[in-house]
Image (tube, rainbow, N blue to C red):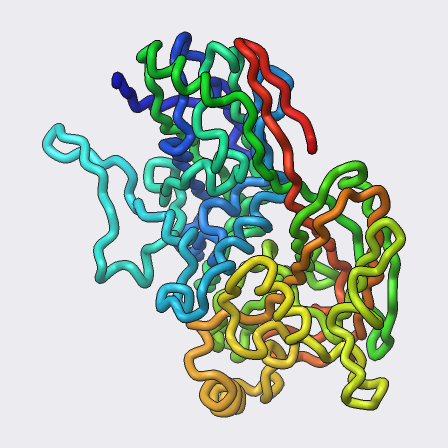
Length: 466
């Protein structure tokens, strides 16, 4: 079988907007199991200010959306890609030693100095084990010195778990479109070293697509013969906006989501995506404690891609007029017998989320706001003694401050409605996250698993929802 590895440059590329690849070789079949995206970024003064890729999404955090198209037909897609990939970085066994340190997608940034020329020979420099704590996933100031990594295309596009072969006899105008996050810096992790020259922008490095193909017509014909009908699922998303919460006041808001109407919805995942609020705060991060700019070591977080924990958060979902959950919904717990405890059932929602989507690598109580707030206010010595040592040992190795809600619908949707409640926190300046930061406007991103079908007949095809 004649197999070939194709390294494809984008035909269109702008470092702050988008790029497009074209898979236009004639009489071949592309193999999506062997498809990788090579991505990276660089920024002004990024070395001095020590900028790293997002701690959960890694290089994937640069991407806002992807689409694999044949002409104008969408074969596979993922919107809100950075938020989804941050979830996938967390969606694994908490007992895994690596999950307590650094998520798998962050390790994608492995090259520090890109291609270096010595004695007329091109070398690909990589970091060493001794450098891993400071170099892994870090950005540089120029494209030539950017930290670059690769990721499987099917990590983004769930459809490719089934659509493993793309013959160009059927798909005659294959294109992969990628739209970058409009402000990549907002999803990166920045540790300011006190430089007077701040990082003003992060830009994408010109990417590459690496994909295998075969050209043997007999084998391609055999593959096409087995493509008659292929059922697969895709990840689609919609959103609604939670208004700012008032200090000490519990509010309930109802929202109708129409993006999944007339579609079968299997599993659902809801992310509480922060908007930045009045202070620009995006997620769980360390606050400056002293005039010298020193920090308490921060927990691993996903910043602007996070699903930010909420105070006494409850959710009810109605599908076609029928409530999915009994009583007042997920997260409501009336066993405390006091109105002040309403919405304290965090483990209720977490249990259903893990039953639906699998393991989540968050430490105990890490889906609450209490562990984020800390114990000692703005006093550095008190926080180091009480918070860092007593509350959790070495918090920089743990994930907390994230709260996802997942459940199954398993029905065709004609009307989808959510009731969401939360209680505002009284303003207090605290180390890991000031309490008012949890009261900010939240983009509730609703991801849904949607079944589709691809039917191939001769050289014709049809993609449709079930």
